[in-house]
Each structure stands twice: as C-alpha cells, then as structure tokens.
Amino acid sequence: MRAEDDDLRAMAELAALVDRLNAEASSGAEPYANVELDAPLVAKRDRLLIELDVAEILGGGERSRLEWLGLPALLAYSDAAVAMDQYLASPGYARLVEQPRPARLLDSLVSLDWFRKPSGYVAAGLAPFDWLALCDLNFRANERPRAGSTYRRLEGGFHRLMFRTELKRPRLYRALPA
Image (cartoon, rainbow, N blue to C red; front, side, top):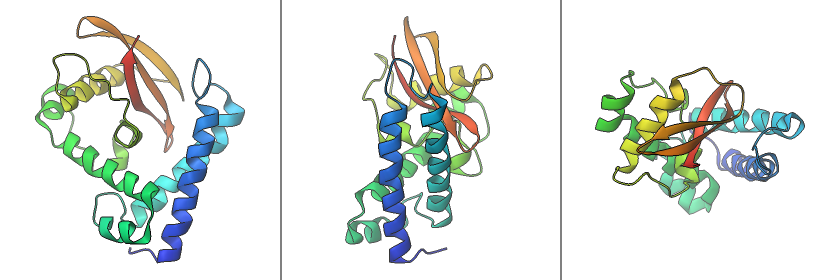
C-alpha cells in the first residue's frame, strides 16, 4: 500500500522518537535492562516496523521518493532492508544458518539495526555476511529472554552477541569482541 507523503513524514517522526528512546534504553552496562525504559521503546519500535512494512518502505521500492521528501531516517530503514535481503540470499546464510529464508524480512531473527546502525566490527578473516551468519547461528542455539547478551567463542575469541525484543521476539542487533 503506497503511503501518503504526510504518513511518511509521521513515520519519520516516529523513527526519530524510536532513536531517542533507544538511546535512553540502551545506555548502561546492560542495554535494555531497565524495563521501564525498554517497554515504551519496544511498543514504538514495533509500531514503526509494522508501519514501514505496510507502507512498503522495506525493500528499496520507495527509495527515490524518500530521498525527494528528505526523509533520511526512512531511507536508512529502506537501505537496511535491502542489505537484510542480500544477507538472507547469501551463500553464508544458506551454508551456516541452514534455515529456510523467512517469508518477510521482519521475520528474521536479525534486527534491521544490524545494517541500519552497524558496529563496523567483523571477525578477522570473515566476509561480513559470513560473520553475521555465524552470529545468527549461535544466537539461535538457545532460547533468549526479552533482551540482553550472550558470550560465545567464535573464530578463536570471545564475542558478545547482543539482542533485544522486536515484534515480540528477541532479535540479534550487534556482535562485538568481548
């Protein structure tokens, strides 16, 4: 469903609010540990992701329009969805994760923020999608609470896999050396 320009502007305002709430909720030694800060963020982020999906922003189809309207926050989500699509189609995903490709991008256990706000870190000797697939595989190994992190030995070193709740499920959003 093609969204009206005013609806896109409202989504951009919601995206800005989500980023502000995220900055508050992710601060501290254990991001998203404060439920009072995290709960409103989860609700707003879920609403934003659903609206972006319904408006067909995720996937690059509206990229030129978002550029023309000057909505960089929505452009970032659109570009992240394109990168997510490339990851899910990658040989690394097929080889390491060994799961069928999700029907929708938002069904992936990897957050769009892995691509939208990348850490820039990739374990030595691995291609970025292979690194993500290795993290994805290890993240899937156990059930997770709503938010937190887990430490895994990957590629000869310990790494912190960080996750948070999005659309009612924990999603991997970052991996860093421990």
